[in-house]
Length: 187
Image (cartoon, rainbow, N blue to C red; front, side):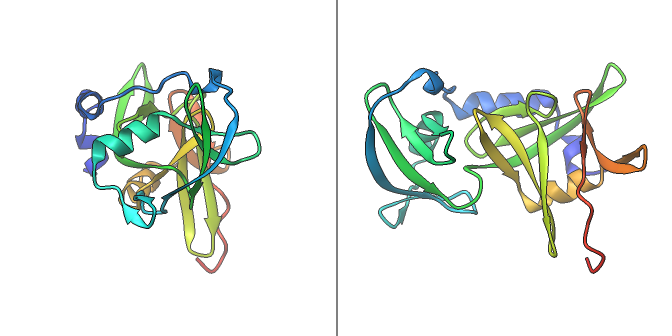
């Protein structure tokens, strides 16, 4: 039995609740652009300010609540009075835990991110897969164009849940089906 099926949705919810803050309505805020901030979110999920990792988890979670993706693809920290561009190497969040449950005859996959979001994959929170010669990388839409890349161990757990429908392999969750990409022959 995989780790994903051992974690209940209630356990993920409790961890997410302990994690703290919910996201404010950043999509409604339209302040002036104030330039760039020396803040980077590394591919491994580490938030780095002026070259130094931010070790205060509460501060990272606070920043995550005011993160927004602009229509031009930029990532910004936004408040009602200012907007600062930051750098994101891959996805701003990591999906670190997954729960796979069956409800109403359908599979439901829920994910907890490294910043405390609890998201169930489905029509509103899609899974997408990037592929290359090294395999596939799954991403989950968290909110407002912001995605979480699944950790390597969750990607393996997710691959174990793949099923075939009408000749296409993919992942089912919440009544939606997310096709896996065709893999290169040499993988």
